[in-house]
View 1 (spheres, rainbow, N blue to C red):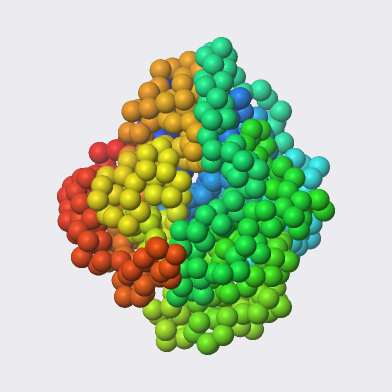
View 2 (view 1 turned 30 degrees about the vertical axis):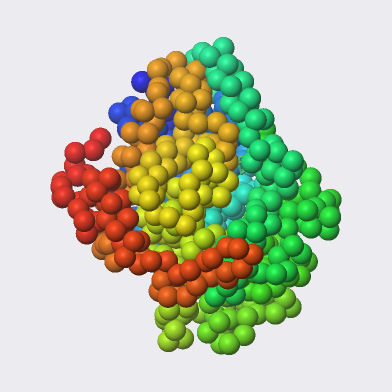
Length: 578
Ligand code: SF4
């Protein structure tokens, strides 16, 4: 059994708040983070994202506040205005740690305040405070204005203005990104949440936790992807720029090509040479993959440099870093912003120049001029321009920087992801490109259905713990189950965690099905089946074989226990779950 935990429920319509115990059976079945958030949405998962009754849930996990590596994280869960799916995203930082230290595992915000407000939480209680003076502020100013109240999660102008890919930004620069949960927060007139807890998180068996931590650390140190010479601890995720170029799977000019000859201009070493690469990772994380420049600015991640770079045909590293700065300041997702500009660029016959990007991003955040349309994301932009085929999305979520023609497991995983075209639900790149923990032929569908199903379940468990997926380039659920046992005093096995992950994945899929999602939504844009990538240097990048893709998708459904059309054989599935 897990220890007793509390949730804060905030009704912004009435201004009332209450702390209550989370039913222990829900913790047992869903842990925390993504799993708990998804469970707490039940019954309201078919509401429109901006309905005042739609909850916005901040949930940490049972390892947060302990010495378990990479566990000072939380998930934010709601329904996405961009995709219409159930949506979660996790982020690291002191906010999660302080939330747990305030005696709370989670905060559920519902209702809509009649005026802008902020929520301030301490161990002693919480208050809803006016935030009219903060409305319109960028993230940095908002965080500074609330710094006396602890760690801050805030929206910027993009969230206030309903940009469909607006982020919730953590004060230390981490983003709850992609699906527009910043716009859900803005629809509630909630500018920020500040938290300043001071309680110690109890650990049931410190020796056991310490031993498990030492095991995990040993595996991190042995992982070339984490601590290798060219690993993410040294260069951050831009370490992938050169690798994706070499594998000929770097999405270029709205996925028309898969090699951008000038990508070395913004590779990990190039960014380090231009800006420095100080460690600037999430609070308490031993890996520290995030980097900041010598001037203190947060430097962009792999997907950001690749999409503001290759996807828009831009090699100017300073323009790319400035684009990242503007997205962080206004609270916008970099992948979706860059991909939307790229689709729009192809539709108008010219990708944006380096000088155009920053003003366009500011227009998007303000929904000004052309920005009003671009704020809707690439699917709606492409449809409005009469070129729906130019939106490189799955379930309206812009695809990140791994071209699916170069990794067939990734192609399948984009489609089966419950939150749309996301690389992190299964991350088969680990097998197909990084060749860990076991290598797999990237140009074959064989075995990919099972690989994706297992990885989705494992990652849902990781998101419910809540730990960082990068830790799993070294460690496995084995070490994290042991960390959990040390933290709680219970006996948790990797199989238990995987079963929780499976329950979470199925619940999300069931919600999506109730919102009208079906097999037709589990598909890739036509371009990937009809146009080749950039072959060369002995690597052939043909279009994906549609018949094999569909065959493997059917196989995935069967392994998941679904019907061949992707539906649930048991319409009462949800009522059978805790
Ligand atoms: S590995 Fe990177 S993203 Fe993950 S917790 Fe550490 S610093 Fe944050």
